Image 1 (cartoon, rainbow, N blue to C red):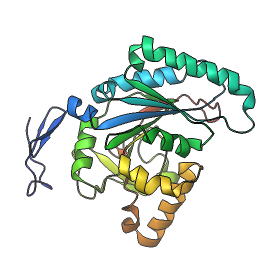
Image 2: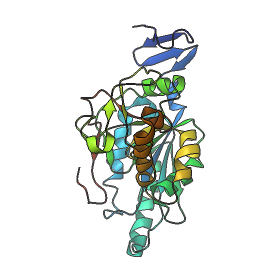
Image 3: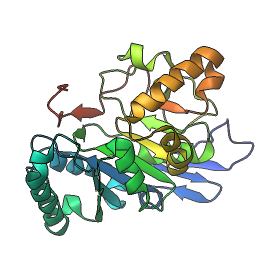
Length: 278
């Protein structure tokens, strides 16, 4: 199957072959995309440690996407938060259990372990992990989100390569993309600049699993976070920017949900903290 993407056809020679994208002689397929992206899995001393009952199925689920199976992966261990010192011994055993998996289990191959010296919240853990990233894209993946449905990663990366307006593509854990309307709304199917895959523009910022640009994190996200939850730092700013400037205010955040309005449910939340449920 071959077609030209008319939004870019004046500037680029584009062809698509069953999950492979050719743009001006650059090929985006499972092999090439695996060299453009790094998976960062964040973990911390949740109640179930030293068991790997949460992180094991989340890492295994990555292998349903061929480029994720092939790419470099980083598991970053946040430090111990004040008040949880009683988990130090279990956390050390948890780290040893995962270290052992990197040598014995195929789902943990090509995986680098990164250890934070102190508690830094999710933003601090990602900051530490990014020191070991050399790819232009990362998949931010939390230790209790299971990928339960396939999606076109190659098409996402090809779209982001062509369209700088797409900065943050989140996989929804809701049954459809407008489910969390108070958080993400307004949500529509407008893609400023176009894309090869279906996306929904949204006005919510979440740290749930997402594909993003490495420089977007370095230059935009992390400077706004000071060892606090990224959602606290980013979401309110996005809402205020949209309130003040409309979709012009949305553009620096570049947030999209993968799929159409009625799509969703790409993730299952096993709730490692035992707080929220699914």
